Image 1 (cartoon, helix red, strand yellow):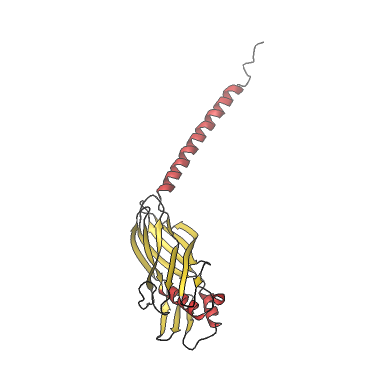
Image 2 (cartoon, helix red, strand yellow; image 1 turned 30 degrees about the horizontal axis):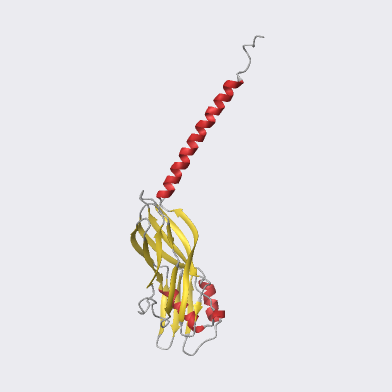
Length: 241
């Protein structure tokens, strides 16, 4: 039996389709490998857990140095690592007080002490600022117009860390919470850490983390506090587009 010249060559078509799919798969594999290689070489910036065990100083004093806290940054720090494969440089960081209004309400409802008092006042949402007034056995002070101040570090090499300062008001509020309250009446400030940096291609990135004290807290009548600061990832985006 002789085949018609017009009959369709299904074998040739099938071979062509298989060859085309093989090319597509090969291209996809190369693209995935390149993407994975690129990801492995990008900086990955994130804070690590920081454990504290100390006797709390007077409420207006720094944890690490016991120097008087100012209206910006303390000397008490948390570590920020570069878990990626290349250097991050031109590091900038700042903090946003996430539960500011809730803390204000909480402090207003606390039972007042003769020697200790603290208030959050004059919240300005447009300027993202507030005043902090406090008094204790030896000091009375108002810190006006506390803002989201920024600070800088030069670079973070792959696998290494830098220590970044916590805002002063964060420590003041924690000091007061434990020294004014029982553990069943504790409310702690929560921060949003914003870090921006350049990668080796000079692209600018911004990453955000929530920073707070975890629930595994030990505090006793000797004013000794044992706790951890932990972080939770919020977002990452490129900011130089």
